[in-house]
Length: 178
Picture 1 (tube, rainbow, N blue to C red):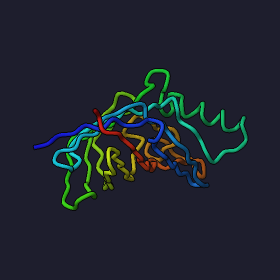
Picture 2: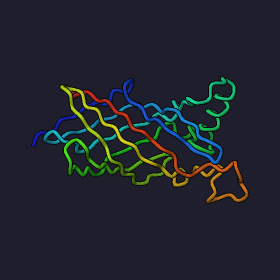
Picture 3: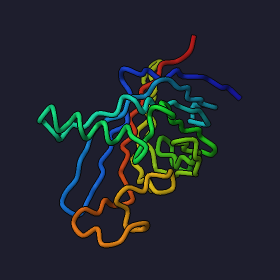
């Protein structure tokens, strides 16, 4: 068996997020701090990456003051608590590679010190010494103590309700370790 490690290239990797509410949606990005992906006989077999929650950006709000206010709220205890938890992480626990290059990845997502399993279909490609891995998943924010304006915890929210699930679009680029 041949095992190979790839180091995640932070500058070429990110998570794109979309959070929805009754009256619309917001979207943005979160940076990847570091990570390693492992291949066994040319197939993704494991790995982990660290998410820099202090890098959360909002892309759809163009007014600087409103953007800063919203970002501050995402950094607060209502959401990511970045002062206490500047990082989140994902560790692959299983790769179901029934179709070459299209595995279903299962792993442990830790946000705010709280860990839950997450699974998603991915696309993995290798070009020379570069590996790319992409996938999309939905995360229930309330599992990670992000209950602000959740219909599960508050009543009479009307059109201020924020849906519990947010979408993550994972985009990783990694370079073979020498």
